Length: 383
Image 1 (tube, rainbow, N blue to C red):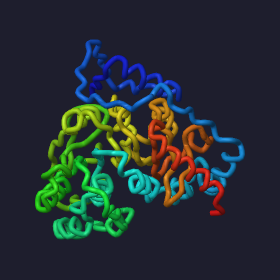
Image 2: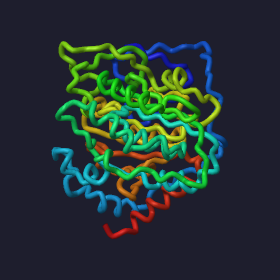
Image 3: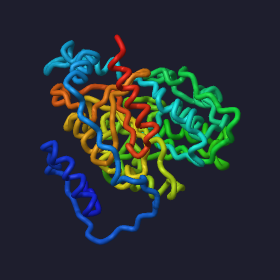
């Protein structure tokens, strides 16, 4: 598989990976393009050369993190990943800090761009669109009525984290509907069809606040990848790149995140406010192929796992890469955060498991301060 990267971007990514003593796999062919590549997006984070440097966790803070996340209670080498409390505490975060931020800072933005990679049944994406655009048309109950009858028998309608039943964002009654676009990217053909039909039936693909469904996989390179067309996979949450599709296969377009944004995101002059990545073990591939997209992204959520390509990397590989791009990252839980950036524990050198990470770009000072304060409050809490 050939990965085509602009020379400057390649050097930056390679430098970040080298810092963790990682090498690009030998079976990956890399072609460096020396000539300039046209860039259509014009927005970049302001004052990137003046970002506050994140301080290292103190010894006392490291001790509290170790205690609260139970590193000594099941995170040892050789223990199954599910024994580690990190997994139990961070599997299903509630991103309350992000919702509070949008609730309190609504007037500071005139538009919204959100991207959900691995959209699945779309409950989280609908709620993100509702939060970002303050549009009551993005309603989880209406969405649920549309998709529930289309899911195959036996599908987990509630979602792995009970997203179906989570409360939705409260519309701000004194604020207008904000224009914008929410991208729901899903590679499983049957699931993508359900999402697309539901979007059209509810009229969410029209107007100034749109919900756009794209049948595609996002990875580190452009190409195609096979996914099963079996109706039983509709709404399933375990299918990913590399999973055999048997005889019922369809070639699905595969894009790097950079290519996807250039091709499908309409706004070129505004930031990407929220980027959510849930691709069953290939999240680092998505970040690796993000290119300049990270230079306009304010907030990122992604999964860490013990499957897919995550098996070849450690959590701090992604954290250090993102830190170099100006992001501060945290283990994310329900109304709790534990900082990862500049808080490297030895357990991170070997542990892999289902968990979630939330990152904020340090140019977003209000949200960055809110998340750091929540981290400090979490350390002060008794549980």
